[in-house]
Image 1 (cartoon, rainbow, N blue to C red):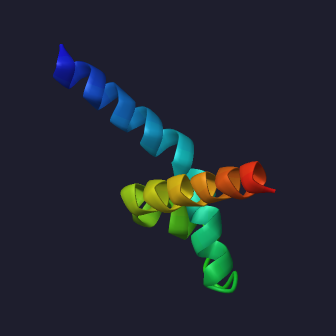
Image 2: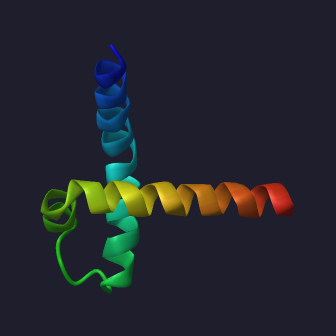
Image 3: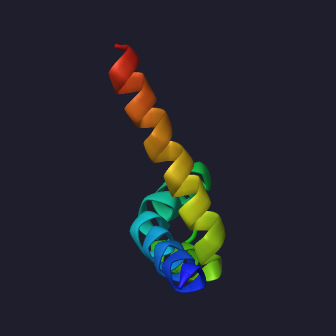
Amino acid sequence: MKLKIEGFIEILIVYLFRYPGAFVRWMFTGFQKSFRDIVEKDAYLNAFIGLIADLTLIVIVKVL
């Protein structure tokens, strides 16, 4: 049961944070590659970057 819940949460996190992370990577590449290429390249890296970016924004908003 625990593995099913962990798998569901992992899929949910990757799905939710993939696009914000890809957008951050797209901005840092100078918009030279297409957004679709960046989204399809590495979903886990995009999700990690998106999660970190969102958490950073939340902390900044809470502090200010």
